[in-house]
Length: 357
Image (tube, rainbow, N blue to C red; front, side):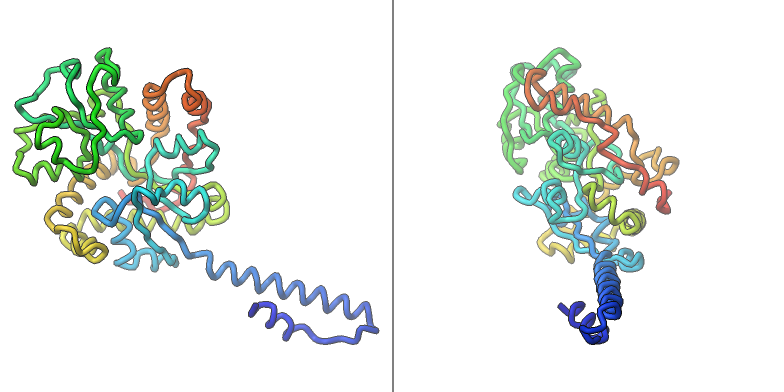
């Protein structure tokens, strides 16, 4: 409204009798309006809404640090960080344009692409799968085949595909074990409701340690040992936002990488920052979580590749792992098998930013 009023004031009033002159002034008014509208759009284009996968916690330390330390502001960005949850899924929000950037996983991007949702990964933060499968020492196994007929607690939301792929290495399927759909609690595992439980290395595993178990009292199995790992957290956006906000996305990546590097070098201060977002969290557990998160990000090869590096083979492998968990005759299998992996990510932005080594 203010643009229209200002344009009207700036445009001189001419006599309707002088038609040629009136046309010139009308063209001038239209040009002024377009310029002002464009300037107004540009002034708000640096606002970015980031949707996390879950509640505020150390899992997202790099972004929270970047906001609190002013790294986003230094980059000329106004970033709003919103938590996720069971009913707030980043991939849906970003696909619809409610949010601009989200934190997700390769499997979510592949599934979204197979359903014609134009999401694109722009940086791969975790360089390992966060999933582990844990057993108590008394239930230790020598082979995955030993799980046949045993109760296994899994999150049945797509994360079970790694376990399915692991079982196939010993000729088993999910039908060969007793799957117990588990909730967000370690109590059933502690009470021996099932012998093997799927956990996140930065969350439930730390809770098991906190309950009194020592690492040598547990058997911890990693999907990576069976070439069945799907990498964890990545940064993604939608195709439209990517095409219209490339410079802002480059600045966002650079500032976020700076945030993760700062979190690595200043863990105690980072824990304090996290508690500002959620004061109900335990500081000691957040420090444990941060340590586990950093172990997923800063691997031995990170210094040579750079933070956020996308390895195309990781995405191709993820697709194959997901396909192994689907019925070959299902519609989901057909859609996923026809999905072009190269369309799910871009390294164009990462190549341009000052990558943290």
